[in-house]
Length: 59
Image 1 (tube, rainbow, N blue to C red):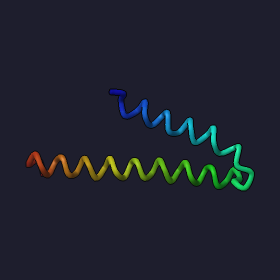
Image 2: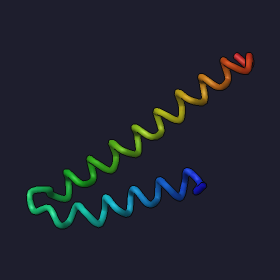
Image 3: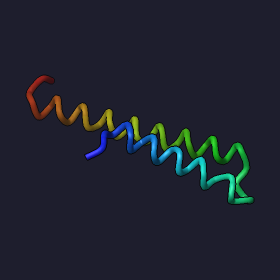
Image 4: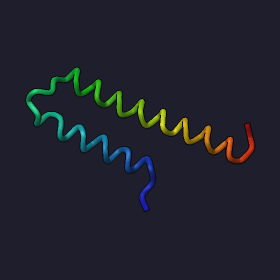
């Protein structure tokens, strides 16, 4: 089983490799997409952290 950081790196690299091939996507769109993915993953991890703390009775 690979670590989460390795999976995240693999996803980001694959996005970077795919995006330049699409001619309709400009650099700004690619940056916005990558920022959106990064913020979404951060938000999901934050929600999982809050859930884990509530479940363990730490909050």
